[in-house]
Image (cartoon, rainbow, N blue to C red):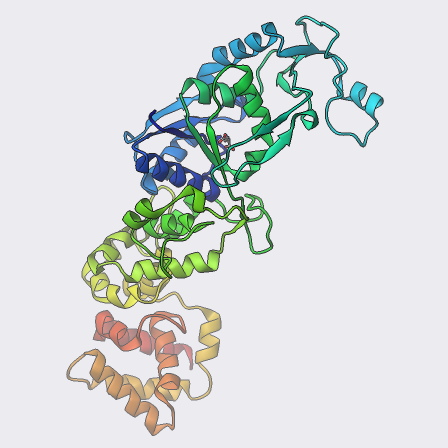
Length: 469
Ligand code: GLU
């Protein structure tokens, strides 16, 4: 039997990091089993669908390493409406489903507001189809439904506690629960690997598989992803869109490594591992069923490690989208013609060890490409205290006299200027740094000045001095 798994996102306008995690787990499992990964877009909610959202899913998948053309699909759930209706009809004709005309108010009037679920009122009324009549699945009165789940063992549900649930609405349209089963069935899915939030639906879905006469798949409900308050990650509250991480400058390799650590860890005491190791070692039955904490701080640190591990040429290439801007990344503050690739290459190794996400490259290097530095006024106020004017005057004179404009000489010079004023190098640097880069923190100062060059450095120091008059 060939293993067939599927990733079945609903297009919602962004790609949830939890979805990315499930996609990767499906992808790896298929690869390990010599199986097939199917992509199915669950787009039955026609009102909420936009073609560009599907495109967003395809490109986000591609970004984390699941490339178009390397999987089956995408299929679109909306194309199979006929099959969904036919399955509902078969269940009705086989006596496994019945029509019901109860409104919610009718049910509540009978059961009281406390009781949830349907009371089975129409079970034996023998209603035929009709406008406004929903089709309900007749759940068995006895027995249990055992879900075979690679992550959770065998969660067992008593059938008598499962209500007669709706499979087609009053207008005849099948509900998601049924459509999802019918599609999995017709696509020959053998393993359903998906998020834990679908577990409550699973016994109902398994009953549908049984009733439609097909052996159910093996399930794997992977843990819900939560924030630091142990709340399920939500798009209203948390940063959940994979695209947001991509556009902020997380590396795809770091991201997918981190996503795979949500509920699982590779062997040995290590977390950062090559993708090939994850592909080899990942086991669904080793996934911890407890909620998985999506730790943004840790991801950031992780990304910094990944950035530092890049060969410098790759780092330079990876920075390009932030140096130019793209459809989704804002352009930098300088004009394209102001950018100097050689100057960038000269400071790239210094930046590489200091940034945690690639977008941080821009504020670190903008002083090199802008005619005038962007002055952070708070930094200015902090650095340009008493003595700053005198220090700048002395630094200007000393720098003008320098024979060789290199980091070492610049440092020795400013050190001497500071020492004459009883200032340690750190203190002496502050006004110079703010005058030249506009900020109190950034790349190592003297290397920056070397790359910026004598003329531009002196012009900026003089301009700052004028401002201090
Ligand atoms: N379309 C569902 C979702 O995005 C997935 C359901 C499933 O994986 O079975 O949550």
